[in-house]
Length: 424
Image (cartoon, rainbow, N blue to C red; front, side, top):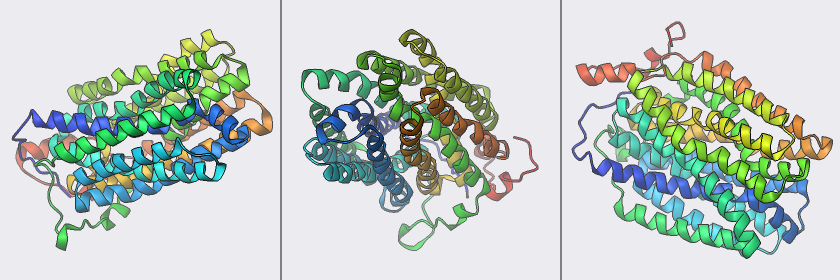
């Protein structure tokens, strides 16, 4: 598998592509994060107990995992533009539908449908970015792209509690659903693929994902991301409600904590990508250090008992909970090759999202059984702690080989980069 070194002919348009991919990912992230601050009101309206609210989030993530797994393959096959545009259009439509539900069963159905549509955007977005940005500039581009997840959290927690106070939880789903549809239409009209992807050799352009199944580096990266997202999305899904129910913090103040948690990642994600690109840092070692810091911050958060303490910890926790994602995401095209970047991203991210799928239900059960705020966050901290182990065994997940090949015109086989006896 190789990455072409063809220069980008229109350096200005690649920023338009990045902006649109980022906007689409931001809206799917807003749609996902809306559940956290809205959960209490939705539960009261539909008659769902606190323990049952985690099932709503898990239902969403089941659909999200499925669409991640197939969305990247579809992006490699029929095109990233269609994948991104249709994905966000449909997820916006189901957001509007969820805002109209009046029963538990219909709520679960539409949550699953939102996730089933939203997840396809990730593989398509990474495919487009890979096609417009060379490996040595990809860290910063991925950093910008990945700010979407944290910005979505900020927007949802800043807007939803206030909309609930002034209108209802339904208004937030209507607002974000309509905005998602508008963004999806713009993506369909304006996006186009770049020159840096080698077309598939298969007949009809259908990608062949079989080599990815034997790619040891991608498998280890998938395991690490599972643990990392266990901590991040467990916090996103439950922190707001747990601060209110478990500690007694005012809902708006709890929302402010989560806003700060997400806001710091908006600048820290592109910054970590920019620094990593400029200094040529080992992405593997950088990720290990971030995961260790993330676990430590979750443990510190578990001991907090006042709003002031939460507000002090939130910015540091927010940085560590998010900046591993662009670093790890930038490893995927390097390990897979650009021609299968969409399929690899979709598959790896689908496995990552299994952590997001399982953790809401687990946290709900733990809190319902023990009532312990501290125990819940210790359970969350176990995720990034365990994620360090597979990251340690990944070798040469950085783009130094790609940079060398871009200069010399030589190509390398991915299997050679994954030798376990090399230096990281």
